Each structure stands twice: as structure tokens, then as C-alpha cells.
Length: 202
Length: 202
DNA sequence: GACGGTATTTTACAAATGATAAATAATGAG
DNA sequence: CTCATTATTTATCATTTGTAAAATACCGTC
Image (cartoon, rainbow over all chains, first blue to last red):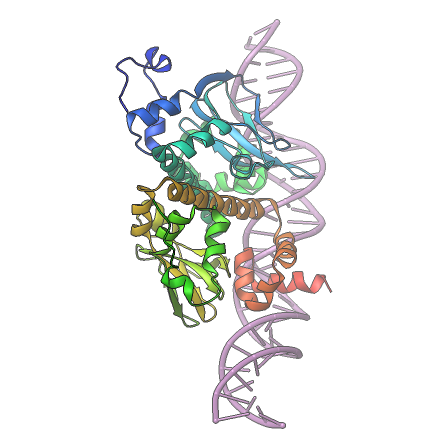
């Protein structure tokens, strides 16, 4: 296999944010990376757009180039925000991706967002053809797994107050960008309780 | 690559529980499965044995052939059980496996257990050599991810009472096999609260 | 800079959960 | 079978968190 001297279309236009994003997961040999990038396209949606829906099997995954999103689940009485995604994060219905089944979550854009879009089907084709991409997909799942495990641990082991402070420390920008009602929901408490927590710190 | 006519040592002795366990993750071609099985050995430990330790980087993963285990984390004041494993489940320190770092959990055997043992190092070697095993590893991570996500969702969306009933329905055997103090910890409540929940149902 | 709408905080009260200790039940060793 | 040990349930009271509603702060638009 030889590497093309010319650059791919996508990477010609501007300083590329996609390469570091792919490399962060697993460093691919150039040919493998090119064959992956061939299937990725850039899309933009406005604030308020619903990117993923709980009631459908999603066909695409997205990497966030710019913007912020939240995932939430509808319950009989209310709605629970359980994830925020920002630049560099992956927006994905794991249930769709792994099991080809409906997921739990709606994902709403909290800003105008620029996203990299990739068809799950195309990705799965590549997994069967290229061992480097198969390992890239493995590392991707493993890294998402660690993140999910850490969220579970955080939730199980720490009080809402501790978790708020953890968030404040690890991701102060988030609290600026997102309204507190969503943060409270994310922490598993009411907005009133969150207000009490915040009041204590002053 | 050709398939050996003779069976591997391990599979000669008794009706094998390992094959279905590996196949459940991802159906491997026979040569790939054989090269994986070559690295798996069977071990037994008594009730009370600590299989994984939070303060060390683990070198092995285990599949449970027979028995039941719990994972728990030590906190300043008490200890929190956050996972139970039974026949067919994988016992693994994800932090060790994915990031080569210490994990959160001790894993204690609640019974005498028979386990399949596999060195993380050997597995990772295989991932680089065989695309089928790389995809097996990918599916393994993906399935663990789905399970972890479901635990997170369950914890985030449902009350302890709902989660107890969910457990009662999905895994009634567990409640027979494990003392209620561990179950209460797992549900994120005190044993007193769990007693109250159980009392309501009568 | 005044207005209307939205987000956040505060208050008062009700409900749920936790801590502690005591009572009962189950289990296992001799 | 009995005793000792451990597990589970019950009771009481203190603390935390939730609900509902009102008060305040913030933001964008005209």
C-alpha cells in the first residue's frame, strides 16, 4: 500500500481539527486514517436542533468540532439530563451503535454546532477490512467505557455536593455554558438543592 | 492458515464452558479462537479470596465459570459494593486493562469460584496480529460499555425502590446468593432502607 | 434604560432517608 | 439440639431533600 502525495479534499481547506480528534483515540497509520476520513463529512446544525432521538435507531455518530450538547431521557413525569458533550466529544447512541436498537436518549444542541458525521454502517464495514481500524474502534469503545465507568463511580460514591465541586473543578466552563436546571438534573438533585449547595460555598 | 485436526488440550477433558463464553462476545473463526484459547487457563480460588485489588495494576482478566463475586470500593468511612459478577461475567479492572492504571475496586469471591484466566498482555499482543481478535476485543469492550451504561441509566433514572424491584425481576437468584447488606450498598441505600422497601412489598 | 420573559434563589412546610440502638430471625459449630 | 454469631427487621428521632410558591436577579429587545 502506498500513501498518496496529494491531500484529501477535506483536509485542504483549513487547519484540521479532525486529525487530532481521531489520533486521540488511537494513532492510525496514514492509509487507514485516510480511508476512515473518506467517510466523514462536516455538518452544522442550529441551537435547539435534536441530533439524536430516543425513539429511533440512529444511523450516524458525530464528533463535536464546535459547540455543546446535552443528552436527556424522558421519564413519565420529567426529563433527566445525564450527559454533556463539548468540543472533542463523541455524540452517539450506544444502543444503536452496538446493538442496532433504540437508545434511551435525545440529544439536543445547546449552541449552534459544527459536527463531524460518520455513518455507523460505513464504520462497521471498515472494521472488517482493516485491522488498524478495528483496533481504533476497540480503543474508541474502551475509552468511552472508561468515561462511562467514571460517571457511574462518581454517581455511586459521591454526594451531589461533592459531584458539583468535582464538576466545578474539572469543567468550570460547563457551568458557565449550561443553565443550572440541567446541571441539577445531571447531578440527580432538584434545582432548589443545587441552589442550596451553591449558597453554602459562599 | 490451516486448522489442526487434533483438539487443543483444554477442550479435551470435559464439556467446555469456555467456547460459548467466547462466542457470546463475537463469533470467531476457528483458528483465531484457538490462538486465543491457547492463552487461557483455568484457576480456582476459595470463598473470601480477593481476586483484584484497587491499589495495584492488574495483569489478568477473568471469566467466571462457576461462582459469584462482588466488586467494592473503599471510601474513607465505609465500603461500597457496586457490581456483582456471576457465571459468564467478566471480572476485570477496566482501568488496568485500558489505561494500565490502578482501578477503583477490590473484587472478592463470595463463593468458591472456578475462573478462566487470561493475561492482558497476551490479549493485547493478539489484537495487533489478528483482525478477528481485534474485532472480538472491540465487541467485548462494546458489550461491557452497554452494560455499564445500563447500570448508570438505572442508577440515574430510577429510585432505589424501583431498582430493587428491577433486580428482583431480572436477577432473583442474586438476592438469594448475596447478603442484603451488599445489595443495599449496591442500590445506594442503607440496609435499614432496604428493609423498609422489602417490608412494603408484603 | 424600561419591560417582559426566563433563570435562579429563597422560604416554608412535607416527605423521605439516615443513624443509632434494640429486637428478632437465621445460620453454623460443637 | 443448644448456644453463639451473624444477618435482618423494627422503632425512634434527627437530618436531608423535595415540593410549591414567591422573590429576586439576569438578559435581550425595543
